[in-house]
Length: 457
Image (cartoon, rainbow, N blue to C red; front, side, top):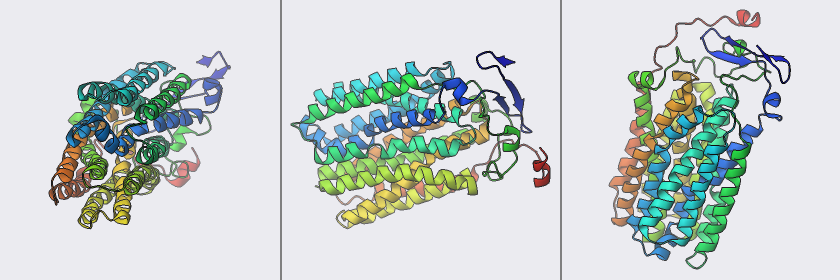
């Protein structure tokens, strides 16, 4: 067929794996600008919402003092936020798939929810209102923005999903650094309303503007500067060959669940989230109950957030060379070992250097799993079902987040408690071992052409 707007022939072709590609339309013809904007805008939106998780941890001591909460009440606010943020991902993925072109509606809804959440935290102290406003609305809003941004990037960069998803999802970690510093040093009961109100307006503006400008490409769109049939078999174009084989056939959610591998990925996210939220809640709780200095709190959570983002970028590149599954197992191993390191730091009166060092190691290990699983879901279950399948996998964060926060609460409220550290670390080691049982379902029996044959394509 022909695109009447630019008189370019638009057609669909398939590769030897049966994957379909829509070619003949450039990103500039569709957007009026480079598709790099569809990386920059989701990245900026992720930066804006990143403070809800790590930033809340840094602000927790001030919120407890200002609102008269117990530590468990403050942790309950974070726990319910995690549940709502993760549980809303399937809804966000379902909504994304039914949109055509513009992504303004889910992004603006998400921006409004985030605005309401931060204004609630700024001006209300009663726990019930904060749970509804910050945890429920804020969690749903952040979940809508998170999944919409991830889905947008996967469709605009189909040939570089691992690297580009890592760039965007990494912003959910290191993007919180400015607010972590502000909350650790500048936030107090006297200026809480002013600081959080200003932050709410900035978050709303950034997410809303990004949402209005974001677009999704046509189904199966492929960039014109790469031959998709060569890309499917030529390792000079696609460096992840042969370590990451494409799906043997499309696996919609029901088929993916029946394969047994999607539930296994769900379990991996549970284990990853348990460690990640344990680390955040432990550092925040220790700052309140054990008198952890502000410098150690800011440096610890800052290192956790920064390495979380950097780890995603590093492991995405590594996964092209050694495979997604192997890299996922390595990241879980690192995250598990880091929990034992934090135990050693706690036993040494929370020595600042040890806390910061092992927090950085923990962030690198736990953060990598989320971005790696986007690519792994796509490789194993097919392009068409990437968004709904990943939405299901990501809900494991709700279970793991709650478990991690409970473990952290036990540490900071029970003197000399070591069992929660041991549990968190053991879960990481178990997750690393679990990846050895992960197998790509229905491997396609396809013989890749020789390099000579590839050259003749």
